Length: 146
Image (cartoon, rainbow, N blue to C red):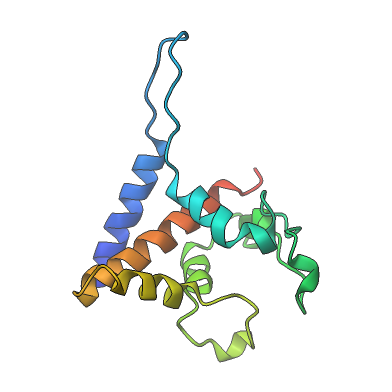
């Protein structure tokens, strides 16, 4: 239960921070804004799902299945973006027998291995994993067609 509360707080912080914007005078160039979700997507997902999430990445043709179009997840779910499902698919550490074999990499294990390099506390390591997955989920939410 505590982990769910921490995850919800982190997700809220990511959403607030991603929506935060600063006004700059027209003559002053705004500094590049750090976008963790876009960074994670570009480095981990775009190779298969494409830079705009349409399922047309350079590796898409090499897979045994058709790479899903991530921009229509909400549309295919009766207008509701399936936040928890997206997080679980990205994480991949849970075994869903009903879903069959997955072509998706298990990013949760990848993130956890990286977190263990810096954190000895398992809760801190899991918070690192959740932060990355939540940022990525939020970015995929931004890709949804309106």
